[in-house]
Length: 211
Image (cartoon, rainbow, N blue to C red; front, side):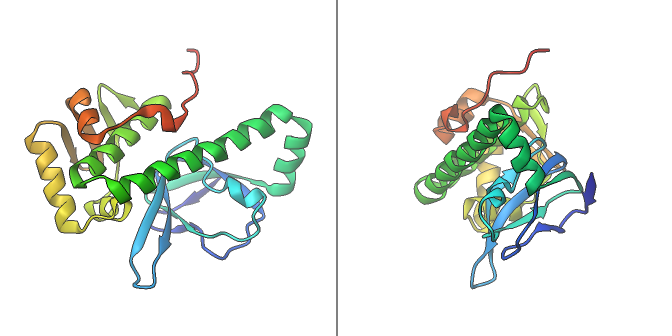
């Protein structure tokens, strides 16, 4: 287990990692920086995510992975992961499925930024995060931790800081959400889903674990 402090790089674009990581605690993101120096967040990673499974088969990282909060990660050498996959075909299939789900989420994010209007775009991201946090048992009664800034939300949705502020104010005024101090609360799930045009199928969630 290794700790990485908030706002520190876990992996950098161009790196040639020789081990895979699992996010145990904290919030991380994958991102790229454009020629203008602006960052585009490509995915948020929550506990139980493996942000860099592609590095098992792709030699060079094509994006950065950043710790957005203090993070705890577990690492395993690629050769050990590959050996386990050879010995445990079910594990290999699970990891392959995980990479396919990541690709599905990426396609939905592309559609979100490219086609949805500001309120729908933001609502969709918030619905996704609440759903994912609930799936791992880290949301209750429509409330979960989501320690990001408005700037982070802009980098994830392609909206300017001013537009992000206006959209959040609009969602608050309609009594759909509360957001602040690292906490997201959804007050009217059905209405927010309608605003977002949110359909959960692209997350390909596994059945809940038995208690």
